[in-house]
Image 1 (cartoon, rainbow, N blue to C red):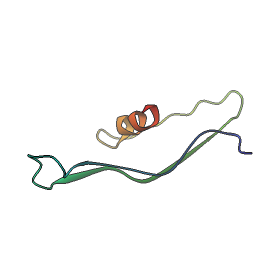
Image 2: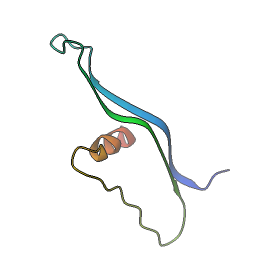
Image 3: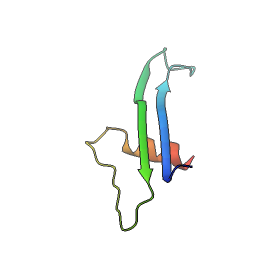
Image 4: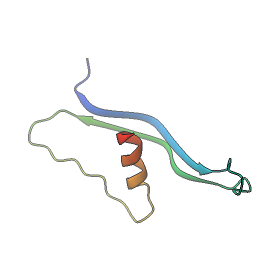
Length: 64
């Protein structure tokens, strides 16, 4: 049994490409993203990155 609080394997999120007005254009927001957060006492984990790097997209994928 793993002590992982959160484990993400090979997450990918692609926007566009299938809508009526999209003209087939796609944007890859996340590609093959992996994350494993272990259950360790007194630990703080953060997700940091530049604007447009996929932080909010990752949060939306995790939260559903």
